[in-house]
Length: 115
Image (cartoon, rainbow, N blue to C red; front, side, top):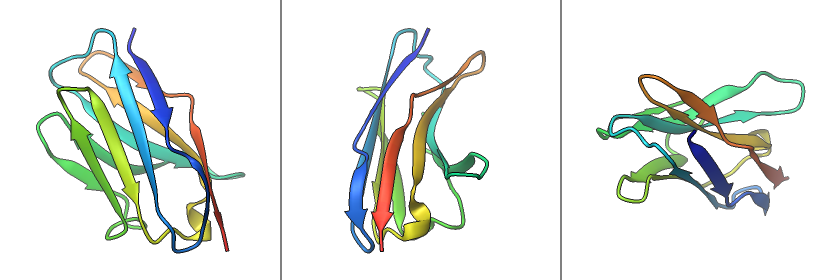
C-alpha cells in the first residue's frame, strides 16, 4: 500500500506564501500521477493541481499563475508552491497518488490564510 506523508501547511497572511510537500513510499509505480486537492468547510473536495511522472501538469483555474506544482521522481515527492495566497485558499489540502491500478489519499494538511 502506498503511503503519503504531507507537510508544509500552516497559517499565513493574505499575500503570503507556503510550500506543501508530499512524499510517497511503498510500491510506487513508474507511471503515476501525484497532486493536490483541497476541501474548504461546507464545500466539496476540488482539484488544485496534478503532475504526472511524465511531466505534464494540470491546474485549477483559480490557482493558475499563483501556484506551481513540481515533483522529484527520484524521491517520489510532489511539491506545491503557493504564492499570493488569498483567504479563499483556506482549506484542508490533500495529496493524492494515482496509478493504473490504485489511488490513495494523504491525511490532509490545513492551510489557513488570514485576511
